[in-house]
Image (cartoon, rainbow, N blue to C red; front, side, top):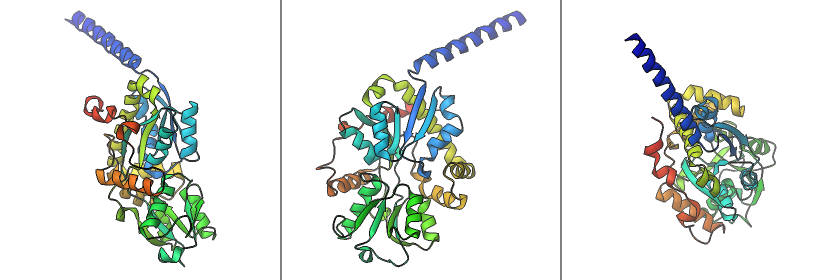
Length: 327
């Protein structure tokens, strides 16, 4: 009997090893570079998946690299230095329209978390006419949203105000305090920092749309086609991170604090603001949220009409999520 058990254990170990090797071989590319447009709290699941080893658990070695904006990230992807981008939906579409074979293959970040704040002397958007409005970069989601928000208040972004590129939220907040900008668009947690520093809330994104295609996953079509198992491994790590993040607020906030160098008090408020709008199954925003996105783009002159879904979206991974999701 003992001999039988030893033989059985050995056979089981060999079988497990064989399965592990076969499973590892199924992942076409193990070294994956994920590019981010910049470091921001709403990308929490990516940081968690990296820090908690969820990517490694799924058999991929992921290097997370932050760029200086979505445009640079798209350039990096087209140049081949980035395998997967996780950034603004609008910036991903720049890659789609570049003619370089970029497609969006996963959503899951459907947050309407932007607000507009002004210096204390300005209390309404009408009073903000002629003033400087800060955005991250031209062509970014902050740019599109700001121009659309102004249009809803009959303010012409080209003639009534000055749109200024200012980089990340923290530098733009500092620019407000230094008198270099009068109005800024902020997401979490910087909007809470702005409020606590005496800035006035002028407008909330949620008054424009209930949700919004905020971040998404995108890659070159050849990578999506040739490396589907590698992508699934990354997405399983992401799904694990979403679950972990929602169950571990305190640890998540501490991780963001170490990553971003911001106070935990603000990050905790920001966490509460967006965490329920992160979805592990990669869904896109609601019909209302998508309509708002396209309306914004059409109004800004970025699009003549809504882009056909097939032109930018590969739904395979979302559609088959229940088949490959982590247990």
